[in-house]
Image 1 (spheres, rainbow, N blue to C red):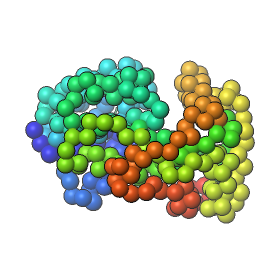
Image 2 (image 1 turned 180 degrees about the vertical axis):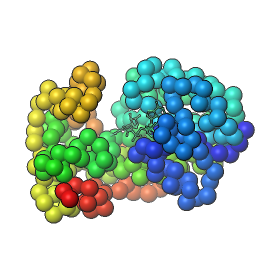
Image 3 (image 1 turned 120 degrees about the vertical axis):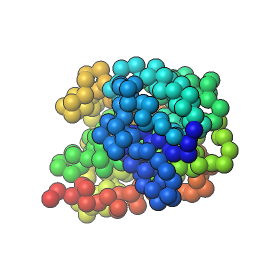
Image 4 (image 1 turned 90 degrees about the vertical axis):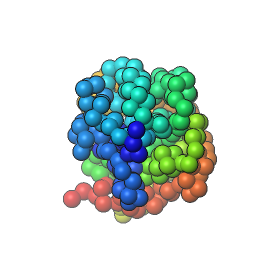
Length: 275
Ligand SMILES: NC(=O)c1ccc[n+]([C@@H]2O[C@H](COP(=O)([O-])OP(=O)(O)OC[C@H]3O[C@@H](n4cnc5c(N)ncnc54)[C@H](OP(=O)(O)O)[C@@H]3O)[C@@H](O)[C@H]2O)c1
């Protein structure tokens, strides 16, 4: 048993920021991913023992594109508990209940098997615009393409998710519940385009496209047709208002308000500027 925090997905959007917070606080940790400081692969159980050495708590980011990820994560969590890990904090997503697909299965596993756990359920990340699927067309075509219509989302910054994860990992007692993490303002994609345009000093247009056209854009980015359709259908639910709910999970964990989209856009203005 140890005190080290194992951060999976440590090179990703939330994991990277969590590692910075742990560094700043001087807390021992291991940054794990396939390309990170500690080699760790969800598909390769032979990498798991070394990752779990002297670990007291784990931040869990479900892998995309790994077959049967929930079963692999359950096997890993069994091993983590046998290694002496006490606290387990999972990144899931808003509106996905325990028992739902993907991370919902791991959420259920924690409820059923763990003594000290928390599940973070964020809405869509602000960083999807600055380093995710929307960046290239905003920068290169001054256009944000989506099938979200006039639907609104209380986007959350991955820095805020990392702060929530840090709070859950270091809380003095077991939390044993889930936390829905959202921003404090619900924005349409029209408004997102406007705020990014203002921040970088050059207008951005929100092009309203169909769900089929959205899927086609994902296929052109290299996703399989099935995954592209799944994601595009997810964005379609935004048009129907599925994500337009503000929750208090971030404040409950950190005591802090959420980053505002305008502040995020101003801090990242350079990434949307063509060289
Ligand atoms: N994006 C959103 O708006 C959003 C909203 C709500 C919830 N989420 C959830 O957030 C999570 C992260 O999603 P993201 O797309 O933003 O990714 P991300 O965390 O930015 O990147 C994925 C991370 O996982 C690691 N990884 C990938 N495959 C791996 C494997 N086989 N073994 C070990 N590590 C692996 C990657 O590092 P290496 O490549 O170095 O291995 C990277 O560190 C997902 O579970 C997603 O469902 C996302």
